[in-house]
Length: 82
Image 1 (tube, rainbow, N blue to C red):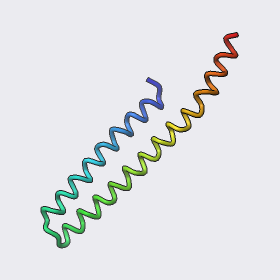
Image 2 (tube, one colour; image 1 turned 90 degrees about the vertical axis):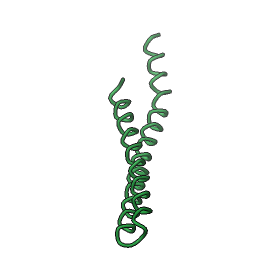
Image 3 (tube, one colour; image 1 turned 90 degrees about the horizontal axis):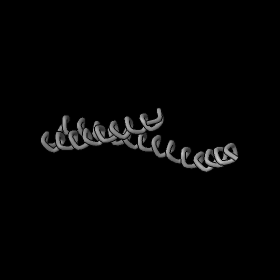
Image 4 (cartoon, rainbow, N blue to C red; image 1 turned 30 degrees about the vertical axis):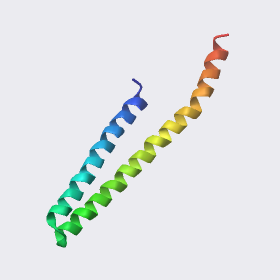
């Protein structure tokens, strides 16, 4: 596994954990039945949702750059083996 693959795997795990925390904060907000704590938990859920979205964008960016690089790498490998 390359370093990039490891990084993507780690980020995907972090994304899953962060999305789980969104659900936890939303459930806590429901249990708090509104009020100050309900608002606080919903704010935390929204923050976590944004963090997960940012991480997902980063992983997608890496995947796109890797996909663009693959044909160039294949061409270089083919030309160097002839």
